Image (tube, rainbow, N blue to C red; front, side, top):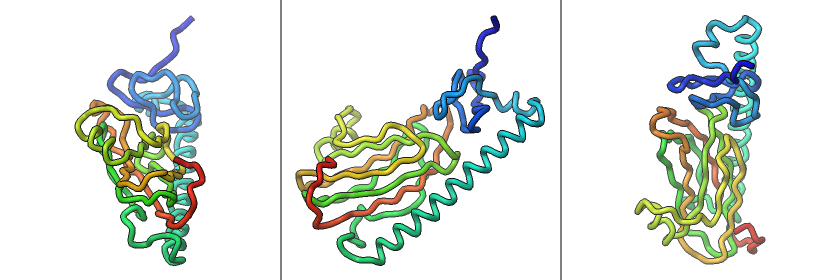
Length: 209
């Protein structure tokens, strides 16, 4: 029996089913689990129907992301215009696109009063469908993190290409929302991610911490 195909050790590929980028050396898609990813070199020599399918799935994913971004922009804009309980001028009320180098991160931080909470969303948009990891630290944990240690986050999101965020602390403190590119430096995979967060004031703690 022939061995299962994998992408080249030095070449990233694409999932034959959903079209998402697949790391070098992978034997299956990390998003849908489909086996036998196709490398970029193989793709140029693949049958026409395979190449057409990959183009269609990528176009469809882009349309989904554009729709989500427009929806998030409308939602955040509506929330900002509605006034309290959302704190418009708060550093934890944000919306924008960030570029994160492989093995690096970006952070959104600010004080959260006990009983208040932060909601939000993130979506990877360049390339579409790649994973982003999220962790939330308080002041002391953040100091450990920047010192190169590995503190346990108060809240985290398993690496994924899109997710919602809901976090409410039980103690007033400065909190740091860390959005990380989980891919190694050797991948050369820089990620563009759209992030929207909203600080909600004067709301009782509902146990989201």
